[in-house]
Image 1 (cartoon, one colour):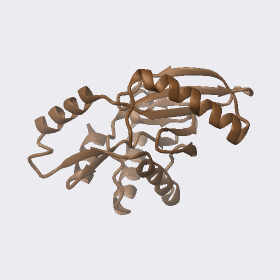
Image 2 (cartoon, one colour; image 1 turned 180 degrees about the vertical axis):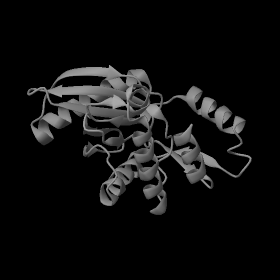
Image 3 (cartoon, one colour; image 1 turned 90 degrees about the vertical axis):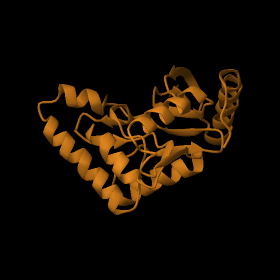
Length: 196
């Protein structure tokens, strides 16, 4: 999978926009950048103000270095753990597996080797929902129950922390951001991240 720098991304967004006009008769009237460490992310709005989320893999050696330092510091590597970046096709497979086993994740609209377009989920970040909720313990139990369900199916999402989940107004926890594959002690690491 290719990863892109900022100047390449501008050209790629224009190409993707043209593709969606041809493929889906879908023209994005507004393209708004959203922060991301491993991807260039964009909020897209169509004619009817429907929202979409576009991710383009990003070259970011600094975040890889930071992850290496963090994982080394907590002993992840010492116990045989490792991580790598997933390809977009692998990420899409994770979304499909989540759907199959009943774990809430955004619907994928389109993808190829250069981008992933999914539905935009309205809600608040899990970490903010915990801080603002009178039922925080119920959220934590729901979150950990879903992580356990994933692990029983042999699935490790990777990179579980508060900004990688959204809680909807009806209390559903939506998982997204499956860029990191954790190996060897991935389940243990994911559970530790979820609890932390």
